[in-house]
Each structure stands twice: as structure tokens, then as C-alpha cells.
Length: 171
Image (cartoon, rainbow, N blue to C red):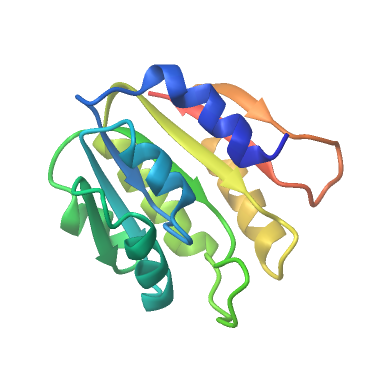
């Protein structure tokens, strides 16, 4: 099962229209669409205009998504309320010519600030994609930072070093 499929199945029963979510890495909008279908409001971050354009089209019939064209490390400049769930995927915009990738420094700040914004009992879902240049280094830094948090679930389809890995943390 793909890591995103596992993640969505895990959260489907935990979401409701009273909750607020954040997608720290919008990409092509799959996670944002999932969250928007089940939450009152979703903040969706990406640093690429292409990601915002693609996802805006995909989510054109949803009025509960706030698209933010900025680095996810700036989450606290935009999100001024407590949140219930955060999705984060390391990596890059799939099938894009853009060389942009998530970087450990901004990802660690974004995840730390997002965790601060979480309500008690809120969730942080972190999908680490390690197969691209810089991906393994970022994954190691993130895993080191979250090791003392309340990790309630992990998922990996196989056991290869560069395979994507999911961590679900409850505050």
C-alpha cells in the first residue's frame, strides 16, 4: 500500500468538520484535497507557483482551503489559530522540471512551529521521501528531531533504506 493511502486510511475516522488542518507541502494537492473533504479549514503551503496553480484547479469547488505561496517555515506568519492536524511530505513536486526540494533547515522549523500550533491531542503526519538528492540527509535530521515525541504509528511498505517512511505523532 502506498504511504499516502495508508496515511489517509489512518486518519479518515479521526477527522471532522470542526477541525482545522495544515498541509505544509501542497504539491499536487492530494493531501490537501483529502483534508479539505473532511475539515472545516485547511491551510496549504508551497513555494512553487506551479503547485498552487495545479492544486487550485483540483480544489476549485472547495471554499475551505487557504493557499499560501511561501516557505512552510513561515507557518506562524499565516496561521494564527490552534490546529488539529498537520501533513508534511518531504521531497519535491512530482513530475515537475523544478529543481526545488524540501530542505532540512526549513522543514525542521516548519515542523517545530506546526507542532507548537497543534492542540493537545492533535496529530502530525510526516512522510519522508529519501530517494532524491538531499532526501536521506533531510530524513535523518527530521527523524533525529522527532525521536522524543509521541510517535504512535510508523509505516513502511518494505525495509529498504531509501523507501518512503511515515511517522504519525500525537501531541
